[in-house]
Image (cartoon, rainbow, N blue to C red):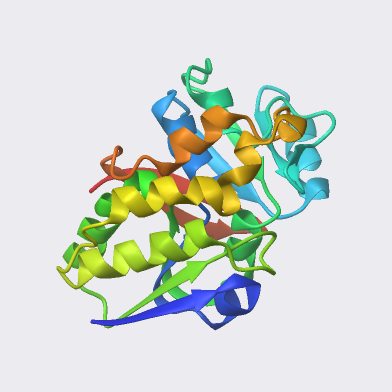
Length: 230
């Protein structure tokens, strides 16, 4: 199995084989919490126009997401894991759009299969990939808005790679906690607490708490997802 770590939107465009698009803060951590809260389906969408179009067609669907971290006006939820921790999503369909993770899904064109990636289900992702045993694995760390590398996504890619090589990072917990002083410092900035609540940090750095993966099925400008136990 050949394992390649790629970066940002350019990396997503180059991804091939079984591809994992990683967004720890916060898109793909969020989607795990959506499913954990009982969502029937999560549909990722790249553009706001398509998002509102789907809402018009399906008024009972829920809109969630952000631009530059801020909840989009007219949406039901932002992109905060804390907002979904106890959300009443049982049986609901959630349409999700973000500035980095979902844009990464849209940029992937040559993959055989696509998964989302986050620390909260990293071990499940590795188990799933091992069962599939693909020739090539692309781990894409999306960073901030897909244009600037960030420590949490790079760490997640490194961690998944280490699990695939059966050489797991022994310091994963310490390094996850150190994110508080790196990209994660925004979650402890009082001036940004309405956009980046502290609870989001703690929910996003929990590693291996979900035993499911999120598999992505591209279709007509949308990215339907499946919550699959690994």
